[in-house]
Image 1: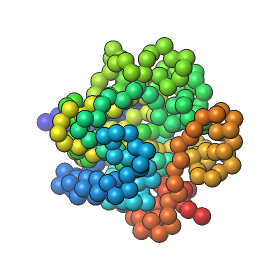
Image 2 (image 1 turned 90 degrees about the vertical axis):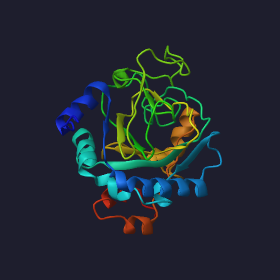
Image 3 (image 1 turned 120 degrees about the vertical axis):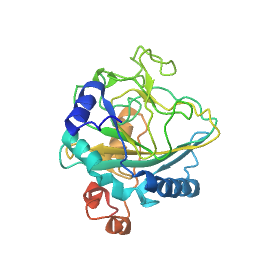
Image 4 (image 1 turned 45 degrees about the vertical axis):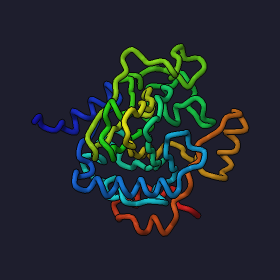
Length: 270
């Protein structure tokens, strides 16, 4: 079996290709309990506006904390901090379950580079690492069950298919796209500028995952805060909608492991 890549090798992969997979962030024997906990919380609290064949729950940390200790697994968090700086913050926690029959999604980039969000960085955007999307594989990610489609190197492009000016149709496959596969317990880390899409689940089993996004200390998250004046002004000025990230409940923060609390303390409910 080949040796695990070093932090320096993974960092280079992120810089050049925009993504990498970190294996065994959640130990194999502990994955089933986390998967079942996240799936159950998602079933109980599924967003009613979630697309067909997808179980989706934003603000997951308020509904389930089974995954929290693994956010500071050294092989994972050391890489995130090496790329974004030591004072990283969690910006989103979301459960994403692709049920059988889920179809391929459209290619896009995530906030703050998705041009359909009110608080987006306008295209053409600068070549700056500003936000990470991490996809936690609580089920194995395979081609058959809809492993995330990515376009390596697309984080260096000046736009993405969410922009009307982009020449590529979001629903059309990209010539160099691949699917990011991995064992349960692995985490796909990608620059949020990366063009990506959900794959089609052609199996009879659900693919359970989480999207946990990370921001450096300097990235303004206030446009995501419910009821904030900044959020209202952004939407009024652009006529666009914006993601909404519910505050972390104080009792939830207090119960998190001490090493995890700094990732969330900026977003605590007043």
